[in-house]
Image 1 (cartoon, rainbow, N blue to C red):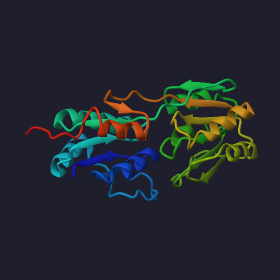
Image 2 (image 1 turned 45 degrees about the vertical axis):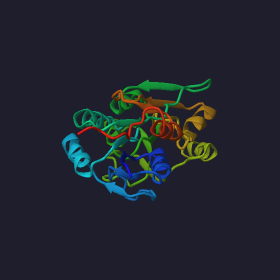
Image 3 (image 1 turned 90 degrees about the horizontal axis):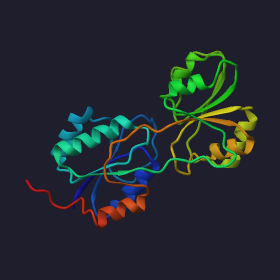
Length: 252
């Protein structure tokens, strides 16, 4: 059986692994940032590789036939390392990249490039902001302590923000629009700060903000390396089964 390493951390990565495991020897790599990840259903490697050199060594030691980048759209460093390693080692690479959300009528989006820019976009007047960014990103908002923050994350934010007014929610998606609508109303949120993650699992807050006329400060996606890619699990699986033949025997 051919060996496939999937760099994961997304729902689609798990779904892809489950789809491929019958025909390939699949290992799913998780960065280990989530304390209690959901069950994956395939062999899992948790923790970093030690940069591009460590990943290259792993691919050689395990004689991996195909590398798949199915990381989060904002995991730019991991994606860059993966592309570089594929070039250096000759291991074929494919990427699973879900499309981003697009604004529709009624959306009030303010686009920014970084989390730091999102902090500035909130302005100087105190606001009630829902930070739906993940716990690694929220520390930047300590630079604007005048706002009230509602922070949602899978794992606890430690240490908590050094601001006078913040509340914390522990929850794992998917999040339905009616529930998000109720959440925004309950906490009297007047601005949502979000990454453009794409997909359906976390779109509920965007739809709810639209319905309530709430502004969304949307952090743009980073630039990612150009590698053969697909937008869905089914399309990427088809690329493996047909056409590109990325798991063909490599020359020595």
